[in-house]
Amino acid sequence: MGRERVREAFAGVFASVPDAAFREVHHVVAGERGMSEWVFTGTTTAGRTVEVNGCDLFTFRGGKIAVKSSFLKHRTA
Image 1 (cartoon, rainbow, N blue to C red):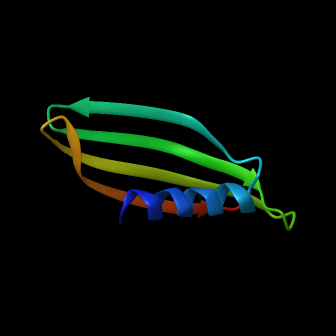
Image 2 (cartoon, rainbow, N blue to C red; image 1 turned 90 degrees about the horizontal axis):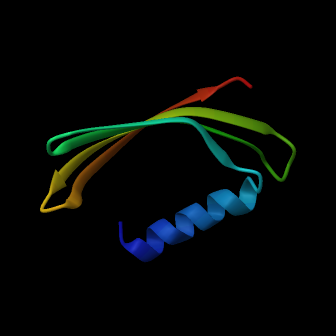
């Protein structure tokens, strides 16, 4: 996915969940691997509460992200 498409995707999320926040954020880097754990919370423009647990796994090469895998679990808020 190109940068512009990623930017558009995030813009859509923040437009539909204007009070979006990432909480309980933890990062770990070990050599060429990294992990980011977080909880995404907010209220949609339709008034629905959103709470999502997430984890991103990274592989770094040459000081840049070469691979990123994301895992999500929607929680009942």
